[in-house]
Image 1: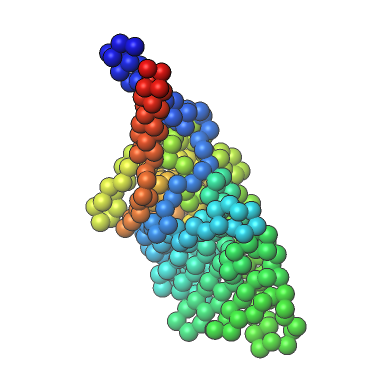
Image 2 (image 1 turned 90 degrees about the horizontal axis):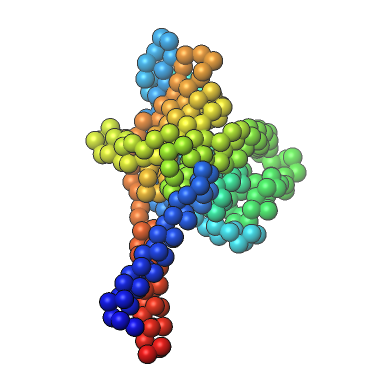
Amino acid sequence: MNRKVKSFTIFIVGLLVASFYFSALSQGALISDQLEVTEGSFVRGKFLYTNSTHSDVLMAYITLSVDDIWNDTNTLLNVVNFKVLYEFESGEDNPLGTDDFTTMEMTAAVFEHNRTTILPAATMVMANSTWEISADVLYLGDTEKMMDLDYTNVTIDGNSYIYGDLVGTEPYYSDVLGMMFIFAIVNAALLSYQAYTPYAINTVANVADTVHFTPSNGVVDEFEPITTSQGDAYDCINVEYINTATFGLDDVGEVDTHYEQKTGLLIRSIEKDTSGSSQMEFQPIEVVIKTSFLPFPIVGVVVSFIAIGLVVVISRKRK
């Protein structure tokens, strides 16, 4: 084979492989549900409330973090833990009405391969300066057991109880029952409109693509940078949802979200009550994005070079 023709053939094959690899993942109106978030990434921001008489009232500081990515012993699939920490401002009504507490923490367990929520509050911790109570099923490491509330570990001021083992004579028995009621109700309510997690999406998207969600799919509106209050700018995917919630935990008419473009982590949201004139905004202060060892573009390049190498080997064997 003529050397110039061979070189041209190798180049074209490699180019076609690379083009196919990228286009196969980027085409289509419904984006993938595979999550690409990285453990240790987080965003911390202000949770602001606005209505017809008040503007940007600071309700709480919120931190959303990718707390852990672990393998489920039941399905052998990876699960992502999204932890949301609320630090409520004193003197303000907090979003859940739990005014006796100064902090609240919830960890959602989400399948990495399809964004489906196993439990929106697999752990729940509420505390003030003198008291703390928590409910947890994440410790099980098994999604089948996690769905059985009898395995729930309830801890009150350092005293732990497995709910299914209670006999009714424990010192904190009534408090445990109260926490279990809250734990069950919060999970049931959130799961009704967060069957797919709102905390992250896949990063391969185009304007007008749709994003799986409940009760209806979201729409990719545009790509735009979001600047934190510290002055750092992040390229983002803007997605619009209806009749749901992100941090307000009570579904509203419109939710405007921004996802960091490298990992798909939610870093800003505005929840608008279209039946009234109020809204809640999560405004980022600090964003930390951990990068993976082998980012997506490098994978495509590696595939292309492997294809080129195979063509070279085959050509040499035919001489």
